[in-house]
Amino acid sequence: MRGFAYHAPQSLAEAVQILSREGDGGKVLAGGTDLLIQVKERGFVPRYVVSLRNVPDARAVGFDARRGLRIGAGARLSEVAAHPVVQERYPILVQGASLVGSLQIQNLGTVVGNLCNAAPSADCAPPLVALGASARIVGAGGERTVLLEDFFAGPGRTVLEPGELVAEVLVPAPEGRSGGAYERFTPRQEMDIAVVGVGSVLTLGEGDRCLAARICLGAVAPTPVRATHAERVLIGQELTAERVAAAGAAAAAQARPISDQRGSASYRTRLVEVLTRRTLMAAWQDARG
Amino acid sequence: MAKLVVSFEVNGVATDVLTEPNRSLLEVLRDSLELTGTKEGCGTGDCGACTVLLDGRPVTSCLLLAPEAEGRRVTTVEGLARHGKLHPVQQTFVEQGGLQCGICTPGMIMSAVALLERNPQPSEDEIRYAIAGNLCRCTGYDKIVRAVEAAAGRVRESQGVDAESVEAK
Image 1 (tube, rainbow over the protein chains, first blue to last red):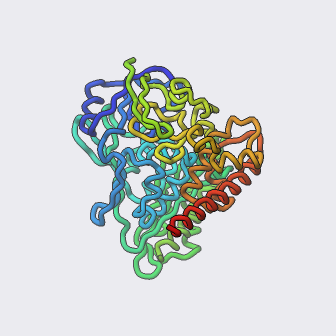
Image 2 (image 1 turned 60 degrees about the horizontal axis):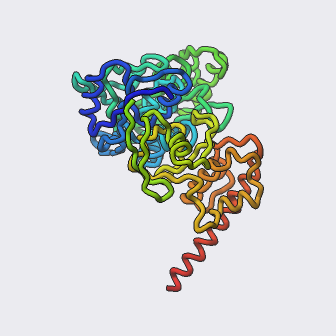
Image 3 (image 1 turned 90 degrees about the vertical axis):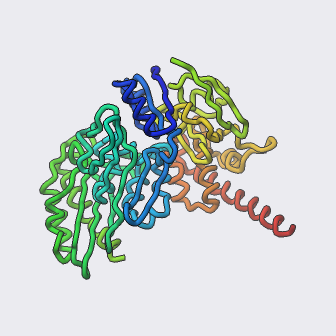
């Protein structure tokens, strides 16, 4: 690996200071499973690296009923997936985080890193967008919070400005009777990248009446995208298998995937329909309790 | 590039290493500490040959910058045998022919050891999931799975014996 300077600040404020003082060519290091591959394989060499390993609470995962779930920038995928609150209240996030790479990668890589790396196929993105999560961003100019659905700018690109980093991801507390599910399609069961991934979250009112629906598609556009047409098919309506199937068709009609080595556009479109339907059925089941 | 000292525990021994910050834990283990049991396969976290335990959990040491191991506990395949006696997983890999060329073996064994520490009674599916991040191009995996099953039996036996001897006291 080519050389770079290495900083391991003791706080987020110090990390921000270093980024602002050192300027261009810096990279924030959390798990490093994407960054080291960029260095080794793609010839991208940062001028300096700012490691979060000494930042207190960077690895914290916490929950309170008012603010919801907080996932620190350093929280490993395996730690988030194994957290009792995440397992109880956010099973859709367990499903996403448990699919990234291998167990070895999940023990190093972070949820926040999975988002910041901004692969269109990132398995944590559809669950968190569907859950209505946002990123708390800190920088020299202060702090701001961005909804995750507005966070991605393209493959490998986010709205982070130079000198900014994501301090944590905030996920609202699930409302009333709600449920969610994430599924992806891959030719192999493990160690693969989603051809299509779909995350769906539903909130029910009386009986099977759908109060809220959020559906996010991965790997069918330069960024994860909401399937808004499909959501509109469901919101305010009585859920039935037919209505869920109609939502799947609406998601497929709205999606504009590309063809690449993982799958053709028409195959991906069909996958969107099937996975939207399946995740909605699972989310519905989950919401009924 | 300024070198820095990394202090961590390797196989139970407090260790200081002087290294450039851009070296991986794998490079430091093999080249500085001469612990060459851990192998480099792909170097990009896909094959699992470089798997070691970091605070008891399996990680690909090729994707961890050495300074990130500061203050952590690292276990390599060299740290498994006790008093000249192989770990049950090592022993059953030998007995069951769970290896051929041997390059994937140390990483495979570390993943299996980590699994059995969490789950001494894994199903075949759980074993296959635990080693999904360890690629083997020789064995076809079947003998590896049998070796891990056999090791699980022995780990349970030894724990059962231990539990009884504790109760007897």
